[in-house]
Image (cartoon, rainbow, N blue to C red):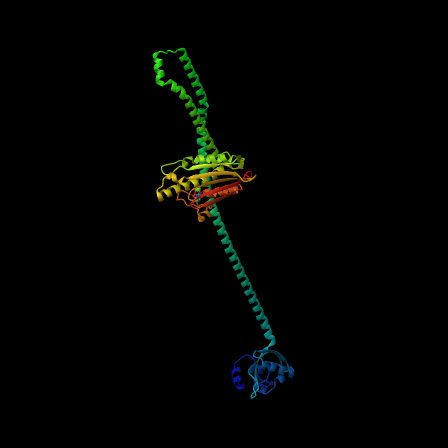
Length: 456
Ligand SMILES: Nc1ncnc2c1ncn2[C@@H]1O[C@H](COP(=O)(O)OP(=O)(O)OP(=O)(O)O)[C@@H](O)[C@H]1O
Ligand SMILES: [Mg+2]
């Protein structure tokens, strides 16, 4: 830009501008500068800058050198010496608009600013910037806080949802367990009720049998005495003797009473087993004979062991060892025996149907068996093993056996709770272990290990 061009531009600008050469000669100014100095513009042309300011020549030369060698604006301070003798402190922003060359000197544009005004403006501006920065900071913080709260909220909602889902699952499980235990308890109550109802009449039948036998013997003895005394009875008596076949009757009546006694004893045993199975009165731990529990559970399932048109008889092989009484919840343990035995019967029935459909063999050829073995492991533990020779369990099923609601049975046939409940009873209530071993196609074995004295 030439000084002439500068003048053209600078004339219309309100801010004070000075165009100087690299050596400090004033080449052009605009009116605001001349006004500040109290001179006319023409008076300023050709003057050296240091003549117009109070700063030393040295300082001015250094400043102008700094301006011509920098690409950026260089801030400096100039104190103008006004025509009336007063001083005016200015801030100067210097920028090179034409760099030095061998042909021409550098051209530097100085933009002046009244320092007092500028600094107060600066303060206001700074304050505003400061406030703005603080406001931005505050908003940023609020935004961060909101983000954090949001994240926490999301996490909490997630946690709550998981907790609720867990609770729902637990509730569903508890509900089914309740239904199951309600079923078991009503089965127990029914069994106990029937046992009680049968027990009374059987007791008086059994109690009176002995007397009835005795009375009959007495009467027969009386008949014999009559026969001895009246060796020739009248024809009417003779006819009756032949009609009732007195000799046979005398022989048979004793056998009859004996078999009635055996029958009544059997009923009493059944009643005992039924009572043993229900054990309603025993919510607390008791010392019991485990074999009685297994036998009474077998008794309840007896009807399913017998041969039918569809299924062959299931043989139960008992290999009982001498066991000490075990401290346990007897009613619950019976429930475990019942579940495992019922599963074994289910699979043996399924095996029978399977082989029937595959090769039409005779049912008895399956030879379905349940083997029950009891053992003392050491002075602290006993073991009950219930094994069947059914279809067995593959690895995929075995890994889920004790999960609640896991069943391979048809809808309505299995709820998938038997083994889950058994596991809870053995492991949680009795501090024991329940495991399953199986060779697919050959059968399955369930092994219950329980401490002799733990109880719970
Ligand atoms: N002795 C066994 N042989 C083969 N599979 C078995 C045997 N015992 C259990 N299972 C398998 O384990 C599954 C789960 O048994 P579980 O007793 O828990 O339930 P379920 O018998 O199906 O139903 P629920 O006992 O509730 O009526 C059975 O569906 C069956 O597939
Ligand atoms: Mg079952």
